[in-house]
Amino acid sequence: MSWQPTMHWQHAKQRANALSQIRAFFLARDVIEVDTPSLSHATVTDAHLDAFVTQFNYSQDSHCDEQSPLYAQTSPEFAMKRLLAAGYGCCYQICKAFRHEQHGRFHNPEFTMLEWYRIGFDHFDLMDEVAQLMKLVLGCNNTELISYQNLFKREVEIDPLNTDKPQLIALISRHNKLSDWLLAEDSIDTLLQFIMAELIEPNIGKEIPCFVYNFPASQASLAKISTTDPRVAERFECYFHGIELANGFHELTDAEQQRQRFKQDNAIRLQLGKTEAVIDDNFISALEHGLPACAGVALGIDRLVMLALSVNDIDQVLTFSIDNA
Image (cartoon, rainbow, N blue to C red; front, side, top):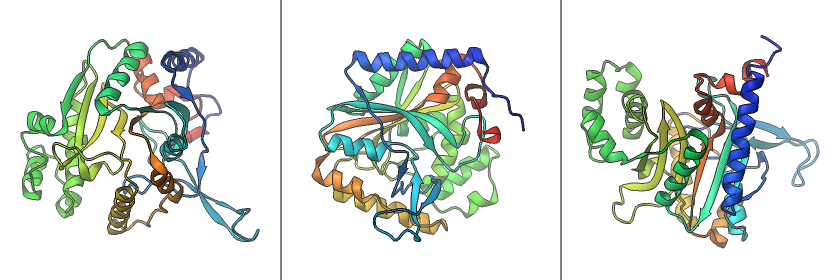
């Protein structure tokens, strides 16, 4: 372990310049910077996200010798939507987020996230704004938009909205990616996500950013269901140079539907042998009060800076990674 930073001073100055560009971008659009807590009494229910948890001994609802769990935010999403429900306007946040996942080339368990919400936008409006931000920071003049369904048809010649396990296993086998855990897997979504990560993502966004939209509804518990095809939800992701950069939604505003989706997530967590996640009642109450029609997106700042500096490891844009923090 080295005591020295993994990011050079020159890169630190370029990172600071990128953050200044981002803040100027939103200032020009009258999107206001906000700040929300890093610790929460609840966390996300997503079966594929695990939060860091700590214990708090001084909760107003418990005796001082009793502990209450607090969760490090995996993103500021729930808190920012509570602000919107309370009457805030379009807003953004640059903050630390935490995900209990393996440290790798594109991920550090503690990372910097840019998240913003636009009242009155749908996911297509927001994809356009993400593209404008990337043009400013990365110099991208063009982008590609393609639906999740058409992407699978083009890249691997299957319809992801009308498939089954034998077809997916056969596809994975043809690409010499098959393993025992995949053969034992019964979740179509898990198999699709594997195919997306292993067979499709490496081939898209090579020259220009690729926006993939309208994911299967079962993969987007916080997004509106499409009014034209109930099999999909109005979620998008952006990929560029092998990096998954942004994940956005035309936001679900129905409180009861959101509660049911959280329960479905928790059922999947139990099937996977994980513990149930604590549902964020403050967030549900905010939805019951009324979340305005909006779209929101989370974008990884560290990954954006990697692209801006043309470096190939996230440690090169962090002062201290998890290994020498």
